[in-house]
Image (cartoon, rainbow, N blue to C red):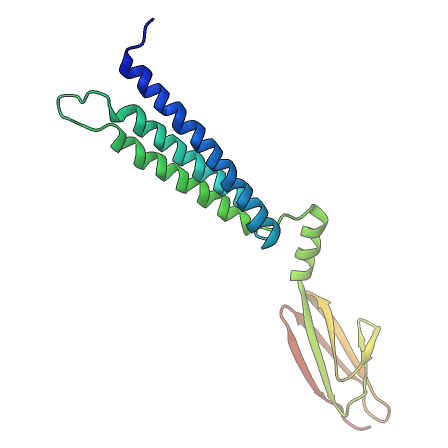
Length: 187
């Protein structure tokens, strides 16, 4: 099959654009990697975004070159004007999907378990008057007042003991960070 002179010229111009485009794209990708990722410590996904933008641009150039010199139908519709916005929209959607994935932390299963356990722990600040009372949570010594302890969500029995004072006993249900202010009564 013989190609007409115009088709050969069109293919030759597309190949020239492709060669120049590949060289320019390589320089841009290298610059993104060396400057933005290695030097400024931006996310590696920036390479994916750059690649998708360059690929969308290449497809737009090829579509424009292919359809620019084709004969128009009777309505004189420019086919490339329909394809180009679709290609741009697909490029934007792919980049948005990559950007949405950047914010998600990449954690292994153990780290995810630790984070979920940490989310269910709360700070409990126990203040007493007078200070220096012993804090017992479910029978375990946790320090002296005024003190902040970390406890998982749940129900606990709190005891405060101070010499020459009555023992304070109370049950608390921990569902959020709390401050307990307790007045110890003398015996």
